[in-house]
Image 1: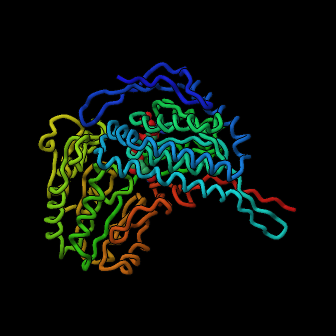
Image 2 (image 1 turned 30 degrees about the vertical axis):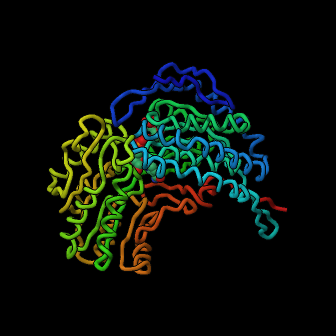
Image 3 (image 1 turned 90 degrees about the vertical axis):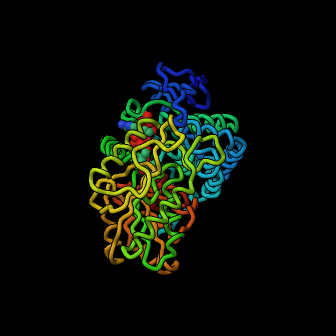
Length: 471
Ligand code: NAP
């Protein structure tokens, strides 16, 4: 079994002070395949000290210098794309054919932040003042396991562009792409201390990282519960806190939408990555007049997506990321049944041919009302709740009746109609008639889905301090 015993601190791989290891388990086979060192508080303090020392010089580099490093990093990552796809597929169960696309494509967005370094040069004259942008300082990044490379790039690339230094703590079950990234950092010779990686348990390292007096900003992606805790803990040192949290996003299908396209789009949106996509639209709102037809279509489209081994090029749907996540999802399916929702397809049994591993049958519930637990809570599994509605006003009300507001979707007769509805949904994103994900547009939540924005120009704005200089 491969052992990763070192941490990346101050530009080099160093012995850890922490002694324990996290065992990585392939959720498709339940087999352990690697062990990764758990940092302790001493390691964390070393990493923060390195980032603090590096900030003095890195924050004074020119935008061109930083852009050059970012472009080199992108090149180094491009060269390791297949290795990255395999690492993520092994550790969190994304089928390899999808890992190459949805988990790795984000590498192409890295170099866009090379151009965005120029954002730091913007100076605005206001009467006798110059208003300038400066980097916020030392950043602590905490990321989840569902799109682990995407989360890394969404934080690290804009922070580098802005002139910040950083300590990254990835999810303990998926640290491999972060380790590969640190190897790229070393290979291209990024100045020591700008990027530091500590692996280990969030429950053990989180509080110390978030309360550390030398950390200026925390950017966290993960569950709403952990995000709320981080915000409370960070309050004592008045850190900037950027939270990217959970979702329970709606998809409104209108009366005159192309129904087959809409249902197909909705089903695939959730089932790719086994429902472990923060922005996926797990509440499908369908006009009552088309409800029966929609449920038949939904089953048909689920049946077209093979569930199976992650290393097969045929597989569309892999396991959940861990056996623990499987238990959570099964618990929600049971709750759905107990609360009176009916199965269109799926349920509690294992998918055929998947006797081992964290597999759950792709599951579609019908006769769901929006007050049910499966319509209110984020399940983070391949589960869709089909909710009937009578009028468009009611559909918009249901869509907004959620503590979350991360994303949403609309399928309407045309884009213009879809856009009108999109503007009435309280969420940070809306996909109209199957619009594509856009790395140049911001992503972030309303309500309990968070308070930050990642990607696009807004992604770097999170890392500015604003100074006004009176002349
Ligand atoms: P999580 O349990 O909150 O964990 C996320 C990260 O926080 C992991 O690195 C975890 O470390 C760490 N952590 C755990 N306890 C901590 C603590 N007390 N203090 C500081 N850090 C701590 O979330 P998850 O279950 O991994 O991720 C799924 C969630 O992320 C879903 O709710 C999903 O919607 C959300 N998400 C949101 C977005 C977005 O852009 N809004 C994107 C992706 C995912 P360990 O791994 O060691 O526990």
